[in-house]
Amino acid sequence: MKPLLNIIDKQSGTAFKLKKNDVLTVIDPMGGQVSDMVVFNAHDYNEKLSSGKSLDFEECLLLTKGHHLWSNRSQQMMKILEDTNGRNDFLLAPCSPETFKIMYNHEGEHPSCLANLTQHLKPFGIDADAIPTAFNIFMNVQFDEKGKLSVLPPTSEAGDYIRFKAEMDLLVGLTACSAEDSNGGTFKPIHYVIETEVKPINQHV
Amino acid sequence: MKPLLNIIDKQSGTAFKLKKNDVLTVIDPMGGQVSDMVVFNAHDYNEKLSSGKSLDFEECLLLTKGHHLWSNRSQQMMKILEDTNGRNDFLLAPCSPETFKIMYNHEGEHPSCLANLTQHLKPFGIDADAIPTAFNIFMNVQFDEKGKLSVLPPTSEAGDYIRFKAEMDLLVGLTACSAEDSNGGTFKPIHYVIETEVKPINQHV
Image (cartoon, rainbow over the protein chains, first blue to last red):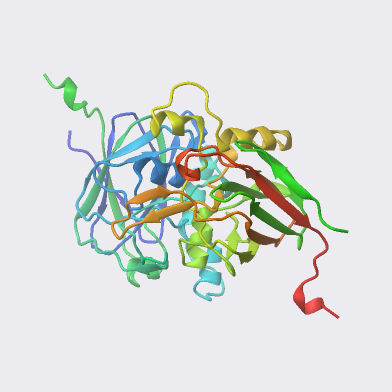
């Protein structure tokens, strides 16, 4: 059976579960669009994605094919199987309503990844305070030797994708990012596909 | 009244509260010693230090004099008033028992910042899962243009210090770090001083 293509509309989000060994593919269908991803242990939401543990164990700021995403309990949560664009960010927290006040001088309502993640994770009992720094797929954060950070438009082109293998049963929150600077000034959808029952390579007959 | 000098023994930790406008000075008395610091809103421990929010709002990987440390609710928690060494890390999570298994191939017990923070924050109802990525004072994490991370010995010399002003009432967890690579292979104490009732500059008469 061909796996279903799922669509996250621009400036929105979703949440879903993965079983261990499922493969999640996140696709940038039009190019230049960021997707924030957070993951939790499906059986205990107090175990969750940790930027600090992942950067430490992978000894790298820029995670791509071959790297793992780690939890706050030092367990591998996902492995990156493929990454056709190759630039993601794991430094910056999801954009929140305050981001637009503080960084953009924007008054009034503005969609944000934190609000979209909270909306979709709330039914699982996870509130905004419990949402960790996301793995920001396709996000192009540049740093210089003095540590100065600049958010540039993504380098991803239409059809670029990244594939993750679940290393444990997971709850995933995923967005099409709502921040102007992160997405080159325009907002586009994100597509994703879940493949189940992918056998580990060493179990092929 | 001269403020009290407090001592954190090597490979140990502590926790204490600060009132808004108190000034905390963390001192490396012998040189080359890291101190992991985590902070929580004293009135609601679900509000806590956020590496992801701090790096985003400060637009910099390397936080020093003049920068703020921010919470997961986008509030300023501390301001760095002085920093005589000038190199701190805000990327890597506190060393944990698993750090020594995974990164050091160390079998058996090993002191760790996460265990020391947990021990001292547990009486406040904060468990290991709730401890965020620390602000790693004096920690010397170098990165190259490809994002490769290297933990080098601290550049701090005996007597180097960093001063923080509390921007809200805080609960602070503080350690003398237990990881060999972070401390140039030797373990030393950390000193700290709390000054209360420091008036904001614009209230001087």
